[in-house]
Amino acid sequence: MSELLGVAVLGAGHMGADHIRRIGQVVSGARVAAVADPDTGRAKDAVAGIDGASVHTEVSAALDAPGVRAVLIASPGPAHEEALLAAFERGLPVLCEKPLVPDSAGALRVVEAETRLGRRLAQVGFMRRYDAEYMRLKSLLGSGRLGRPLMLHCTHRNVSSPPGFTSAMLVNSSVSHEIDAARWLLGQELTAVTVLRPRPASNAPEGLLDPQFVLFETADGALVDVEVFVNCGFGYQVRCEAVCEAGSARIGDEHAMVVTTAGGASEEVAQDYLVRFADAYDREVQAWVDATRAGRATGPSVWDGYAASAVAEAGVRALENGGRVTVELAPRPDLYA
Image (tube, rainbow, N blue to C red; front, top):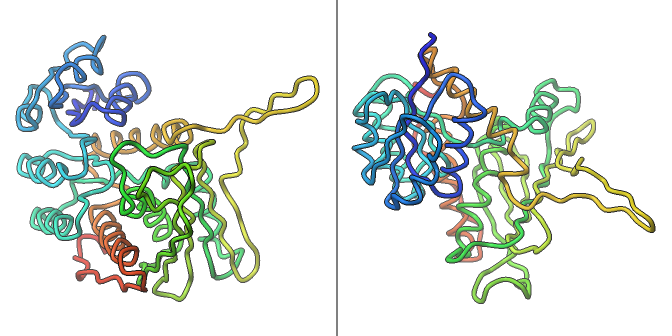
């Protein structure tokens, strides 16, 4: 197929604008055909210099714009369900940034809607599955060379949290990536969550429980722990160590530029996720474009998105009540077997 895939991008904020840039300058086989955002000025800025991209304030207008054959959802999480269902009604393939839908009930409605179609149309944007280091770790664990995985030790740090960030969002926004990565790396569902709360860091906004220590149990008896610290102040860091019966493997040790000058040396530290995972986002969107043009859907499914929302929901309950909370998942439809 030689014709470029016309994509409607929903949301022109930090993530959406980066995807617009990516489709226009990095990814092959696609073009930005339409953008929807309530802030038309922001949307127009994001598509400046892109020929043929129309700007809309309403999702439906962007989905129905001429040349649109696929949808990339980068709007805030609460808007995802309506946008996904509208895309499904039109038979449009979707790449939806995480979370699929913030609450598990809404995410399950999306699963049920896609199941009724009888085919996958959507991919969820868990970009770590496309990161080179994560892919190497997945391959190593899958080879069996290190034996059965026993534990995953994870670190997730941000320079600072944005305005309005809540204690619950450390789990259902930040740690949602570790939730999906753990399910994917181990090939197991997460069955229970406990959240421990050390005293808040002095530079955390008042009332924000930051950092947190999140402990997951898996269906096969492995443990996954996550230190999440969204106001560490110095950089964006994501690390993961798998401890197995016959060895261990660690990823995320920054292999960045080291500058040596008189009297010392310094190493770059990424300041946000768009820098740390730039290559992963490029691979993710390229893989989605290639699969969509071939009439297929690959990558994390809406079931994966639902599972992540259900686990995160249990995690928020654990944060609030201070105890261990079990994860309840609906039966998995055959479409996602």
